[in-house]
Image 1 (cartoon, rainbow, N blue to C red):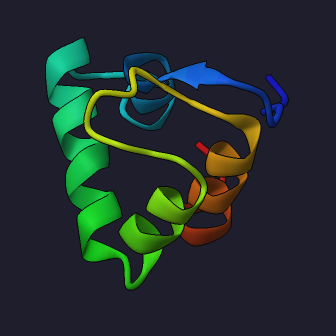
Image 2: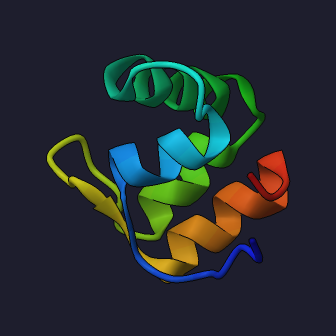
Length: 71
Protein backbone atom coordinates (compact mmCIF):
# COMPACT_ATOMS: atom_id res chain seq x y z
CA UNK A 1 0.00 0.00 0.00
CA UNK A 2 1.32 3.44 -0.92
CA UNK A 3 1.25 6.02 1.85
CA UNK A 4 -0.49 9.30 0.96
CA UNK A 5 -0.03 12.69 2.60
CA UNK A 6 -3.56 13.73 3.63
CA UNK A 7 -5.47 14.49 6.83
CA UNK A 8 -5.42 11.60 9.31
CA UNK A 9 -7.05 11.06 12.66
CA UNK A 10 -4.48 10.81 15.45
CA UNK A 11 -5.18 7.16 16.11
CA UNK A 12 -5.52 6.35 12.41
CA UNK A 13 -2.00 7.62 11.71
CA UNK A 14 -0.62 5.99 14.85
CA UNK A 15 -2.01 2.61 13.80
CA UNK A 16 -0.22 2.92 10.45
CA UNK A 17 3.03 3.24 12.38
CA UNK A 18 2.16 0.56 14.96
CA UNK A 19 -0.35 -1.86 13.41
CA UNK A 20 0.24 -4.71 15.86
CA UNK A 21 -0.79 -2.93 19.06
CA UNK A 22 -4.11 -1.55 20.32
CA UNK A 23 -5.23 1.85 19.02
CA UNK A 24 -4.57 3.53 22.38
CA UNK A 25 -1.09 2.01 22.63
CA UNK A 26 -0.32 3.02 19.06
CA UNK A 27 -1.30 6.62 19.77
CA UNK A 28 0.76 6.74 22.99
CA UNK A 29 3.75 5.31 21.12
CA UNK A 30 3.47 7.83 18.27
CA UNK A 31 3.10 10.67 20.76
CA UNK A 32 6.25 9.47 22.58
CA UNK A 33 8.20 9.33 19.31
CA UNK A 34 7.08 12.86 18.43
CA UNK A 35 8.29 14.12 21.83
CA UNK A 36 11.65 12.36 21.40
CA UNK A 37 12.37 13.72 17.93
CA UNK A 38 14.17 17.07 18.13
CA UNK A 39 11.94 20.03 17.32
CA UNK A 40 9.06 17.94 15.91
CA UNK A 41 6.65 18.92 18.69
CA UNK A 42 7.48 22.59 18.14
CA UNK A 43 7.04 22.24 14.38
CA UNK A 44 3.63 20.61 14.85
CA UNK A 45 2.58 23.45 17.16
CA UNK A 46 3.68 25.98 14.52
CA UNK A 47 1.42 24.13 12.08
CA UNK A 48 -1.56 24.46 14.43
CA UNK A 49 -1.40 21.30 16.55
CA UNK A 50 -2.72 21.55 20.10
CA UNK A 51 -3.71 18.93 22.70
CA UNK A 52 -7.41 19.23 21.79
CA UNK A 53 -6.86 18.44 18.09
CA UNK A 54 -8.00 14.95 17.20
CA UNK A 55 -6.53 14.89 13.72
CA UNK A 56 -3.43 15.90 11.81
CA UNK A 57 -3.55 18.22 8.80
CA UNK A 58 -1.66 17.26 5.64
CA UNK A 59 1.10 19.72 6.60
CA UNK A 60 1.42 18.12 10.04
CA UNK A 61 1.46 14.63 8.52
CA UNK A 62 4.23 15.75 6.15
CA UNK A 63 6.28 17.05 9.12
CA UNK A 64 5.82 13.74 10.98
CA UNK A 65 6.79 11.69 7.92
CA UNK A 66 9.84 13.88 7.28
CA UNK A 67 10.97 13.24 10.86
CA UNK A 68 9.98 9.61 11.37
CA UNK A 69 9.79 8.25 7.84
CA UNK A 70 6.74 6.73 6.18
CA UNK A 71 4.74 4.25 8.21
